[in-house]
Image 1 (spheres, one colour):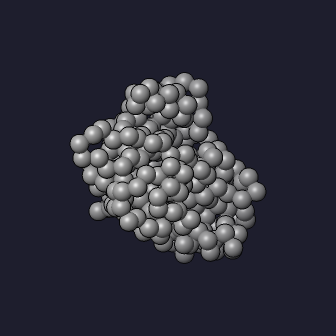
Image 2 (cartoon, helix red, strand yellow):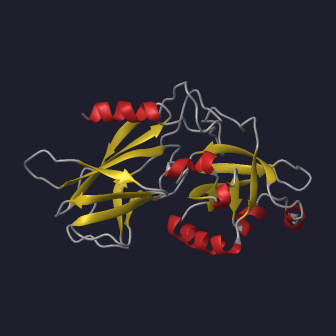
Amino acid sequence: MALLLLFTISLLLPPASCSSFSNTNYYCDWCPRHSTASLLPPAAAMAMAKEEEINGGPHVAAAGAEFFRDGAGCGACYQLRCADRRVCGGDGVKVVVAAGAANRTAGFQLPREAFAAMARSGMADQLAALGDNVEVQFRRVPCEYKKKNLTVRVEEGSRNPGQLGIRFLYQGGQTDIAAVEIAAQANHTPPSWRPMARLRRRLWRTTRAPTGPLRLRLVVTAGFSGKWLRAHDAVLPADWRPGQEYDTGLRVTDVALRTCSCRSRVTGGSEELR
C-alpha cells in the first residue's frame, strides 16, 4: 500500500526547479526564462516578518501561483538576482516561499530587506527606483538549516486528541513534502498509519488524531522520484499542545540529480534524489 501511494504521488507532482546555490555539486544553472520581483505591501510584510522569525532560515517571500503551487511550493528555496547589472549584484538573495502572493502576482513578493539585498553595495535606492515588478533571474536551490532537524509545529486550533494541524519547519534540501501520515506509538503491534490532508501553505491536518504519543512518516519528492522518511520514535508526546515545536530527529538534504527543469509544471522527464 505504501509503495502504491508513493508511485501515485510521484506521477502527480512536478519536478523540482533548477538547483545550485553555492557549489558545483548540483547540475542546474539559472533558468533561461525570467520572473519578476516586487515589494510586499506593508501589511503583508509585517505578517511575513513573523513567518521569517518562525522559519529561522533565509528571507521569506510570497510567490505567485506558478511557484506557490496551491501550497505545495511552500518551503522551497530560490535564489533571485535582478537582471539589471548596473545596480544588481551577481549573487542576489536567497528566499524561502512562505505564502502565496496577493492579487495573483506572477513572480515573487519580497520584504524590503530581501529586495534591497539584490542590489550592489550602496545601490538599494537605485534598485527601488526601477519600480515594481523588477525583472529577475531565478533558480531553485537546496534549503540549508545548519544544526536544525526537520521540526513539527502544532498549529493553533488543534485539540488533543482528534483535531491536529501541523506545519514543518527547517525543511532542508531541494524537495517537496508530498504526503504525511501519523500513527499511535505501538510497542508490540504494527502501527496503524492515518493520512493527513494538506491545506494551503505548509499546514497538514487531520480530524482523526489518535491518543497517546504519535509517530510520523512522510514522503519527500524531487519530481518523479521520492522516498519515505520515518521517525523511529514518537515525535509528538501524549500531551502535545498547540504552539509547541517538536524535533523529528530527521534531516532532509536530498537534491535533484537529473533532468532538472526550470518549469513548475511539466508532463515528462524524471529526477533522482541523492
